[in-house]
Amino acid sequence: MSRRRVAYYYDPDVGAYTFGYNQYLKPHRVKMTHDLVSSYGMIDKMHVLRPARSSAETMTRFHTDEYVQFLSKVTPETCAKLTFNNTRFLIGEDNPAFEGLFEFSSISAGGSINAAQRINSGAADIAINWAGGLHHAKKSEASGFCYINDIVLGILELLRDVPRVLYIDIDCHHGDGVEEAFYTTDRVMTCSFHKYGLFFPGSGTQEDRGHGKGRGYAVNVPLKDGITDEAYKSVFEPVISKILEVYRPSAVVLQCGADSLAGDKLGCFNLTMHGHAHCVQFLRKQNIPLILLGGGGYTVKNTARAWTYETACALGIEDTIDPLLPYSEYFDWFGPRFRLEVVSSNMDDLNVKDGSLDAVRVQALEHLSELIPAPSVGMQETPRESLAKHLRRGLDCGEARDDLDVQLAQHLKYVSTLPGSDPPSEDSDNESDSEEENSSTLRRKKRAMSIITNQYLEPPPMPNARRKFFHSGMDLDEYFRVEMEKEDVLRFASQDQMLSV
Ligand code: FE2
Image (cartoon, rainbow, N blue to C red; front, side, top):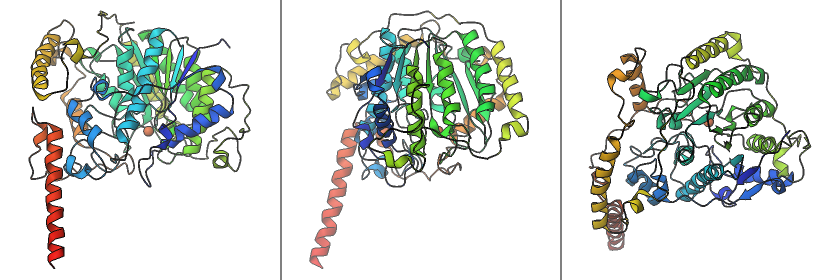
């Protein structure tokens, strides 16, 4: 098997963050993976790099300023106040405001952006960031344990240099955040294989195919419980082969969410480690620059096993590594078998039982055959500095910021009139973009679901207080300071009362 230059991004601090007691997503799994990767001696076979942490400004390439500023300020103590009782930014209980949230997000995002830069520079054939893959995060809202969408930021970085990017998502949950971000463009094709049907996030049918210029460039493969290696391969290979043939991507980003493995705490598929890793092996064979990212994976030891094995697949040494685990810091976690394996269970494969898998495959291939091969894009020179620097203004003081707002508004007005950037008009869609479809999309967006319970969340009652900091020009720092002062006054008043009693 031919050699590939592999860049592996890892920040030793990432395992120290915790979402809190009893939370499903454990950043510690990335540290466990790294420990196993090191114990297998893979470190010497690739470029191991510590990613530069993403700045808040870089995050705003996709996320809104208000949301990023909120994430940089929020603490467990101030969360209820700053989200107006979880009605904004962090909805429901899936996304706690844990200590170090912003730093964790900046590590995750920094790794994916650096991976994209490495691919763009031509210095690597495959770049890995197991701390990334947080595919549910939206422009101004956290979702499904994801706060900052490192994948979107990484793909935006790739698009500086390449015309077309293929995003593939093998997490058990639909890659909704990435799909939504690129729903109206043909420069990114998204393809998600996921469980569909009363399952978080509740989206991803085969009729969700993109909009406007992006029509046909969102592919969804909805699956049912218990899919096995063989069945998964029977849909993954033909669909991805067809996409590669028709779309001819310049780079591929593979989200390797490990909650599609058998025995996952939140997932419901029945893939073995080898079945999961087959997707990596299949893409490596295509000789297209590849980025491997993490994602879900809630049975920690199996997630670490799979990502370790997939690192070996990236290096092309999977056939040479010992299935008996070497001694490592977390060796005890892998008992009683201490093997590099995730085995399947005896659950039924509902996809094969009712024949729905064949229908899904046929429909996906039919949709893909309607596409124009390799859509061409007009590449433009992209400024390497931030927009603020590009406009030669700082973001430091209030007055400059107001001024910058005006300039940005003018700039965006200009950008929106450039050819090819028209918003999709009603008649730009074909007939199958029915009203029913659009209304179902809207309905879906309005009703959030919990990744833990897979139940729709009832929208909380709107608070009486006015959400002032969403008004243009409102400074969140100032809002934050005033609210904290009010709290201090109340606390001192109650202390005085107690003393007088
Ligand atoms: Fe997931």
